[in-house]
Image (cartoon, rainbow, N blue to C red; front, side):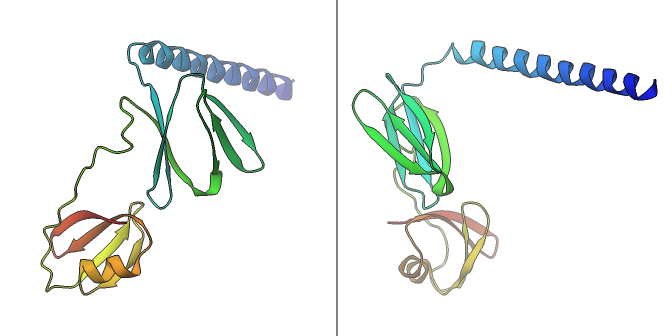
Length: 151
């Protein structure tokens, strides 16, 4: 008898979780209807961004890859290399036009990836830029932190 009551409680609990999840999705969908996001931006682990128009967009998953196809083009992304997928109001992949650094070029710096992993310690940003792969990085020097890109 105790096992039946426990099972009945578990089913009731799972139903409540599903109901809350459905209501959340409906609420988010209703909230999202107020905005128009005509573009979907994909950013890989190196910081490279690809923008697709969402008009007639179809997304499928095949063999560890995300395949995004709209009326104009088809793009394929390895899921293991995909960092961010987000909607955007403009076709520009990023709002960052230029990045200026305010670190002292005569002092050593610590460079971190955008996910916070220490990439190394370098004598300058130019030395780090020569040794790092393309992407967006964070440089820390004493109490100063700034972003920089390697292209």
